Length: 126
Image (tube, rainbow, N blue to C red):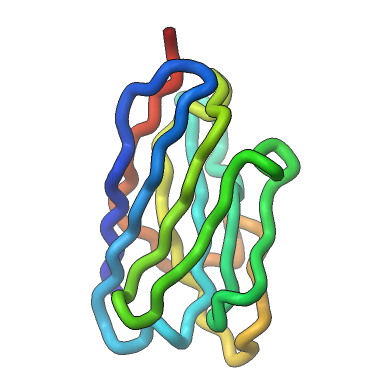
């Protein structure tokens, strides 16, 4: 599966962005999907994830209540709506894949993911 994230950019603190991730391949519906991010000098960290079915989601504490992830299996796409952005949200954001037989499983660690695509840069600054 190939992944391509888009929608990043420069936004002021308190602003919003919506990231999209397009996935190729017929196995999209067989995978839980997640968002990871990596800031300069830091390790890649988990941000949010959605199960194969789309009904189950999980968020890192740092983004809970501000970010929302969803998926559209018909379009082979996932989304990350980011509101109330903070400077510490600045990073390269990646969408990632975790194949699973469990339609409700939501992977919560970067090590759970086996594939990720090119990221998109989000910069939150005034």
